[in-house]
Length: 201
Image 1 (cartoon, rainbow, N blue to C red):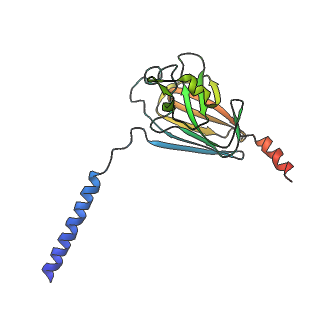
Image 2: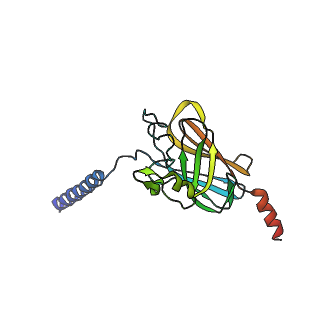
Image 3: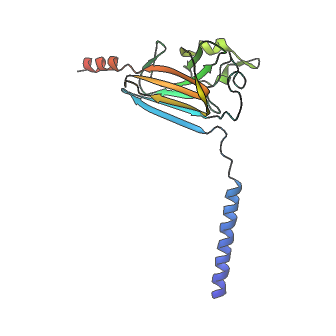
């Protein structure tokens, strides 16, 4: 009886070890550009951004990895998506509640362009003859924002997005990567919504 228990224990231990080794063999390395998410309530609106966060890794990012004059997906891996829970105004355009892709066109000098793609497309949907078709990208913009980038003294290793509630009516969305800081404003139209509420009663 005692031997039977020992054999059973040994057999169970072997099964456990085999299962552990198999699961260990299936472990994957951490993602080079981990998924990230940021969200902020501003006024009556929830603003959320889903993106992947690439690293500098000692490289020259803008001008080399991301070419000047070429629209970029504003992140890595999957499409960078911004979502508004209510209607907002961005770049002078009224946008409905919903999801929009974020693209960025970096420039060697002057203003950069932030695109909010109304179809939620990937930037690679606009490939033509091995290049981004910039006219097609612009055609599907729900909003286009011209922004002068700010250059920081220190490099930020990983790309990140931040949403500041500012005065709780207009939000500031900031992309930071390497030495570049790029911000645009989102008007959550609090006053217009308040007027709408008054008219409902």
